[in-house]
Amino acid sequence: MSEPALTGSRIQNPTNEKESMRIRALTAAQAAALATAFIAVPLAHAETIQLSRMDSETATYIQRGNQGNNVECYWFILDRLEKRGIPKKDIYVTFDDPDTDGIGIGLADTDANYSCEHGELRVWSEEGKYVIERKF
Image (tube, rainbow, N blue to C red; front, side, top):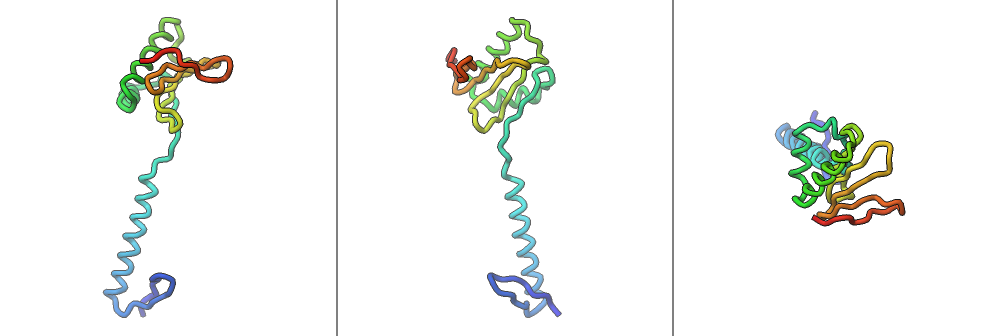
């Protein structure tokens, strides 16, 4: 006896084994397509990494995933922080943020935050907003 298969909103008994196999194959193909759709949809979230733990692969990923002027801004900030003597372990880099078109840089244990968006160096102000400091 063959098992019932769902087609539309009614249950139908396949007339032969060949029809039953076709329905199972179709169901398996639909399940695979649905699973692929869920896997292919990335979850949007930002990545933050301590600069001292960043490897060359991640650094390359950040550079290739951003506009040239944002990357120039990023290196400008890192150079500025290095000249100030800020240790790499106190610098955090944020990338792949769905709400930001660029790269964010923050300092541990402070409110100092920088952002490189649309070729602009933005600095977090005491007023609680980003102020454009320089364009690249």
